[in-house]
Length: 339
Image 1 (cartoon, rainbow, N blue to C red):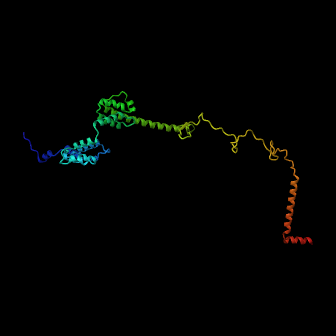
Image 2 (cartoon, one colour):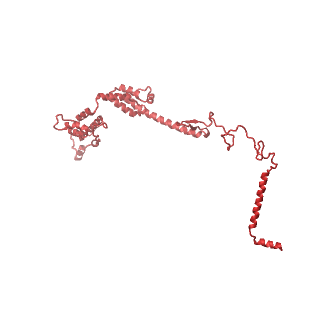
Image 3 (cartoon, rainbow, N blue to C red):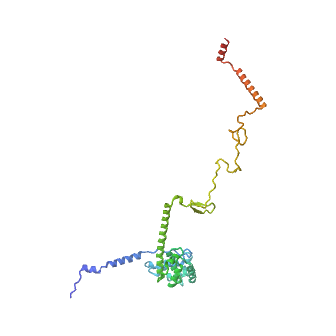
């Protein structure tokens, strides 16, 4: 059997990389280009806890390991992100002539953890107290589940204890919906709780919309006269009281029968008798007055004063007439009278 030697073009094609290999190299190169943001410098203050800073530093050194080819680069990078009082604790051990020189970044983490971190026993006691007070209540289940898993991991709770504690700490709505359902792991129970909470939220929103629509429809159908009327009671704390217009227990003020111009403050004991304007006596009106046609007598003193006043007026008028000059008409009339 004779095997034919492949031609030049065929030999080059067999040696060329496949498309799958090219895509894999491209993805790896993209992953190497992704650079995680540098953590903030640690100064030893309470605004940035040591545990959080160590977690961010380890994540940076692990994910961007291509930037730190040697342990010396990791030490230099870690020391650059330590400042303030915390830097004084590692400065002497970073010197080349130091007796106990730092040889890894983990040694820097350990020194700072001992200085600014809490002991394991203290952290465990705080975690126990926080776990004891943890309840879902009105919180969304995802936020409650995040705190639950963090504390159970720190306290090293078993899956069985986690399942029992989760049923005790969840909200009453979820506990009623759970009923007799059983799940194998706490995570499965948590996934069901998230789905059930979303369903309950949708049901609650739908009921709210239906009640609102029913209220709008009822207001359109109900006649205006039968609608409840809201009144406010006087006082500092005003409460709204809803009563229909035909409320039987209400009392209306008595309607006054007196004329509008009369003084309502004065209450007469009995009806007043009519009084005559002619004679001034009570018991009859002017049209029925018996003295209507009588001539009122005039006293002598009043008559003498009236006659004296009349004589004075006549004398005054005669004097005024005699003082005036005669006009042409008066002269002609006097001459004609003489002839």
